[in-house]
Image 1: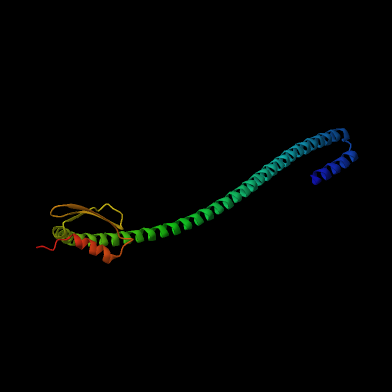
Image 2: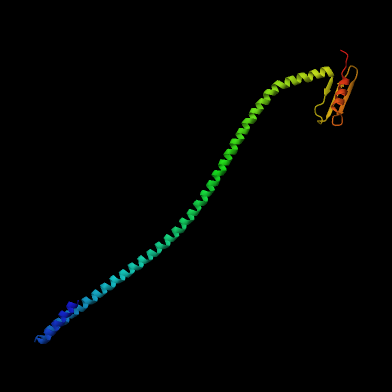
Length: 195
């Protein structure tokens, strides 16, 4: 552009020195007008380009700001998720501990149940052996003493009936106020010595 201005200036000087001044002056004016129009077109183009650059910069800045906001939001969400993960991990560890405790308790209960079953089996075995002999002994005592006992009394009360040859005698003895020897003597007094 500067070169064009200088060329135009030199052309003007030549025109002024020459005789063809009007013709040359007209050509210079046309050239100058053409130059001015090109200058305006170039200015418009540059203005459009600069406006486009400014618009692109504005859009890029806005996108950058939006992306920065999204980044901050994503970081907040990540922090929240990390805290939630820590809480879930802590709860999971607590539940694991409780589960282990409950499994140990269950195992202990199973062991206790097994022991109870073993003891029940032993009691059942003993009962099948003892009850028939106890029934035999009770029947033997009844035959010898002729006393029929009531079993639904209080623990310290002996109650029953002695069936003698002529007479049935009720028995009601409170063992908490009498000695064992006294109770035994009274009961043996019911037994007949005649064989």
